[in-house]
Amino acid sequence: MLTAALVVPLLGALALALWPGWSRSAARAFAVVTTLVPLLLMVIAWSRFDTGGSMFQLVEEVDWVPSLGMGFRLGVDGIALAVAAMTALLFTGAAAYPVDTRGAARQYYAWILFLEMASLGVFLALDLLLFYVFFDLTLVGMYFLIGRWGHGEPQSAALKFFLYTLFGSLFLLLAILGLYLSADPLTFDMRELIQQQPLAGAGTFAGVVMAAFLLGFIIKTPLVPFHTWLPRAHVDAPAPASAILAGVLLKMGTYGLIRIPYSMMAETFAAWALPLGILALVSILYGALVALGQKDIKQRIAYTSINHMGYAVLGIAAAGALLDGSETARSMALIGATVEMVAHGLITGALFLIAGSFWQRGETYRLADYGGLSGRTPKLAGMTTVAAFASLGLPGLAGFVAEFHIFVGTFGVYPWLAAIGLLGILITAALFLRMLQSLFFGQLPERWNTMADLKTSEIAVLGVFMVLVVLIGVYPAFLLDIINTSARWLVGGG
Image (cartoon, rainbow, N blue to C red; front, side, top):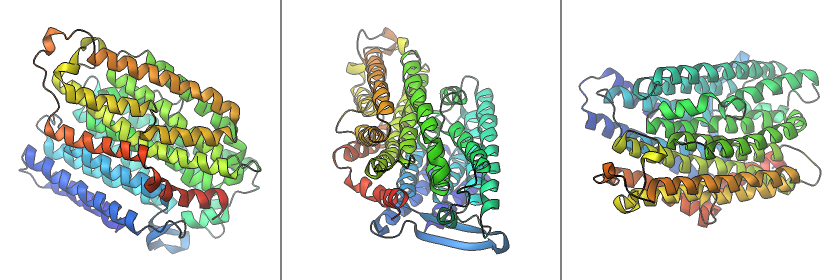
């Protein structure tokens, strides 16, 4: 089932790439239907997942090079399943959302499907080498989506994105090799490495491997000061690609932190937890403050991603601290970090799609160019308002559930980090309220007198995202139960 979730979008991408003659509407419809297959498979996987069972379930594996411990291994725990399901949904929304494909719809949707295959592979892999292969393949798909269908200076943005994140992935490869060579017997099997903890007590060498892992994943997340590739990539990318970049690719950094150094090097991770938490706090405050000063819709949303991913890393750092008597708090922080990944994917993915709707209608992201649109485009105003309030952490919406768990858990481990980090929520509220005022209140400029409201396809995609954001906010148990399965194993040893 998990293998099919990867093979179907790959075959769909090949069909679009190699079979000419697709019309724009046919290519789009084919891509949407193809993305629905992995989404359905993730729903089935969710229904089959036993919340009282073992950590990794639904495992599929085939030996590749047994003597070197290499194999094609897929499986999910609660954290992977939650993020993979969100990923599948986001790709369906990105494929369905209207966008200008510039006469190359077949190629555009082929890259969307290729990127879905690689992205799901990252979250479903149970083999370190396979994880790295999928991790790097995502760079290829996003590079072409930005460079070919972006605007502004897309080639420059795509090159910076690719080189910067490839630089980080090279450190990741070195760290993987260091961990692999320390295992006995040699293996890339994530389950075995979690059990072995091969670098426990390894001193300086373990610290070097940990530093390489953290650098690779922090660049991907990204945290300050390794964030400079992100705003330009977001602004110049087409809106669906921006939604995927924020909603899926950034999660590979935080998911990778949990899956590899946190799980496989628990002792060393605990020694690095406080510095990592401080770096996350800097990103929370920096991202919020810089976002507050942005005059561009996409740049403002992009910097809030740095802020929100800082929340997720703060939760991961608190969860890995291994302080005596902090097990309940650490579990809550880890659950919060995972919910933050899911919530941020849905909320910020929706915000970037909304930014794309503004671009299609006005070909500008400048906040000052808009105003007074609440009466002219009430549906657009409504969707933007719900997404904005969810992002600033309003109770009853998904963002609040995530941040509540993160800050309560962190307060039980590093209370001063939690207290200072709360300032980020206050600044985030201010920046989103100001954005809503700029877009929808005041006098309507004459040029927008005929501006069209959201189309049916836009409402359908955004509506699904917002329904889930509300559902997680008012009834989070369906998500928390799945995630808690992994938290129980990772924090409490089962």
